[in-house]
Image 1 (tube, rainbow, N blue to C red):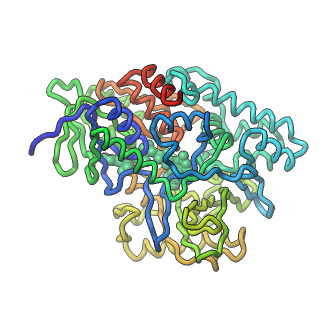
Image 2 (image 1 turned 180 degrees about the horizontal axis):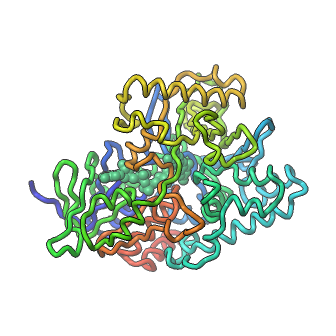
Image 3 (image 1 turned 90 degrees about the vertical axis):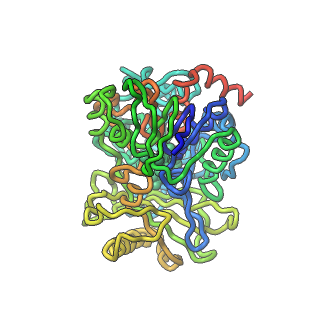
Length: 510
Ligand SMILES: Cc1cc2nc3c(=O)[nH]c(=O)nc-3n(C[C@H](O)[C@H](O)[C@H](O)COP(=O)(O)OP(=O)(O)OC[C@H]3O[C@@H](n4cnc5c(N)ncnc54)[C@H](O)[C@@H]3O)c2cc1C
C-alpha cells in the first residue's frame, strides 16, 4: 500500500482538530485530519430523530458579541459571518430552580444586568454580588490567551488564582447559602466537583456566558461543516472511519514518523497533533522519549463526571421555545456530583431547548442532562455502540435506559407539571454512548478534571518531549468551544509562531 505523506497529521476532527487543520491549511501546510467516526465534528456532531435535530455536545456558546475575544477568533476562522446565531434572552439566559422555590433565579446578560437582577433577588447581598463580579473579571484577565495576548500555561505557574477552590470561594464570599448556590447553579457546565474544582474554571466558563450567550440555530454541526469546507478548499484532507491505533517512531527513535490506522494503513507526516484524550495518546505510542513519570501522570489523571442525556421530541406546538437554559435542583445543594447516589438519582437536571429555523415559537427538541456515573453501566462495559447507530447492547440495557429516562421525566414533570404529556418520543445517551462516540475511558463530559490542590498537574502542555508531537483539544487547559479555540491557537502557535498567529488573528479583525 502506498504511504501518504503530509506536513501535518491531526488525530480527531472535533473542534480542536478542525481548528488546527484550518489554521495550518490556511498557512499552506499539507494537512490530513484522521477521524475514527463516520461523521466529522466530535462533540459538534448532530443527529436526527423523528425528523428533529439534536446537538450532541454544544448547546450554546459564550463570548461571541462583536468585539469580544471569541468573536475575534471566530472572525479569523471565517465563521462569525456565516453561523446562524441566536442571542439568548438578556433578561435571563440561565434560569436556576432550587428546591421547592417555584420561581427561578435568572442570570442577566452583561455584568450590569447580571448584578441588577441578582440584587433584586438578594437585596441584602449587593456587596457580595459586586465582589463576585469583580473577581470573575479579574481572574479571566489573568489568562492572556483569553484576551488575545501571548502566553501559554507557563505564564500561569505560581499564580494564586489557580489555587482557589470554587465551592470554598462561594462560602467565603457570603454566608447566604441560597446565593452561594445560585452563583454555582450552572456547575454542570464544567462538571463541578465541590472537593476539587478550581474557581478559575468556574470563572472562565461562566464569565464567557455572562458577557454574551448565543445558541446555534439548526445545530452546532454548522461549525464543523464550515471549517471542513474551508480546510478542503485549502487542499486539506479529512479522512473518516480512520481510527489511529498507533503512532510509530522513526528509525532513530527521535520523532513520530507514522500514524498507523486500525486498518493497517500508515500515514506519514512531519508533525502530528493529537486532539484525542491524552491518556489514549499515551497508549498509542511506545518510546522511552516520553518519560515513564510523564506517562503515568497523564494516565492517572482523573476525568470529569459523565452524564445521562434524554433527547426529547416534543409534540407539535406543545412547548414554547425557551431562549434560555434551565438548571433545576431537587434540594438546596447544587453540587450534585458530590451528593450523587444511585438510589436518589436524579438530584438535578439541565435542560436545553434547541433553536430551529423551522419554528421560532415552539420547541421541537429538548436535551435534558443529569450526571451519571459510568459505574452504573458496568454490566454493559464490554459492549460497543455510538449514538448515530441503532442500539445493540441488548434488552437489559434498553430496560436500564427506559427506567432512568422515566425517572428523569418524573423529576422534570415535578418542576413543570404537564411536561410528560408533551413528549412525542424520546431517545437516550448514557456514559457508555459518550465513551464510545468520543473515545474516552469513562464517558467524561469534558475530559480531564482540574484540581485546585495541584493545578499544574492537571494542565497538559501543547508540546511533548517528542519535538514533532503536539497536543490540542479540551484536555489541554479548558473545555468548551471557547477553551478549545484558545487551545488550538496555542498548539498551532508552537508550529508557526505565537506572535505571528496572534497578529494574523488581529489582522482579520481590522
Ligand atoms: C453533553 C455535552 C454538552 C456540552 N455543551 C457545551 C456547550 O453548550 N457549549 C460549549 O462551549 N461546550 C459544550 N461542551 C463541551 C464541548 O463540546 C467540548 O469541550 C469540545 O467540543 C471538545 O472538542 P475537542 O476537539 O477537544 O474534542 P472532541 O469533540 O471530543 O473531538 C475529539 C475527536 O477525536 C476523535 N478521536 C478520538 N480518538 C481517535 C482516534 N484514535 N483516531 C481518530 N480519531 C479519534 C473523536 O471521535 C472525536 O471526533 C459539551 C460537551 C458535552 C459532552
